[in-house]
Image (cartoon, rainbow, N blue to C red; front, side):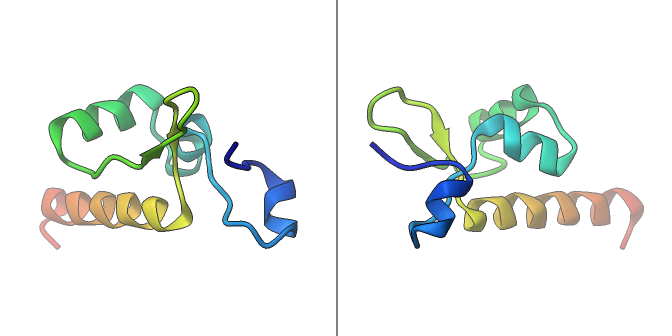
Length: 78
């Protein structure tokens, strides 16, 4: 089993975030994240081996934030 949640951080194990947590941090919906993955806009994070749920790392989160920033830059002409 892959540890998730705050307890895993205290044990020195990399923290994995659930899709709903990532969506909240980014101000988007789970559906939006899944659409971005399906369209290739962002790379898919690894999946939990038992239930198939996405497991997002802090690196995955940073990649999505960068994609968001680039999109906003193009939208606003930065």
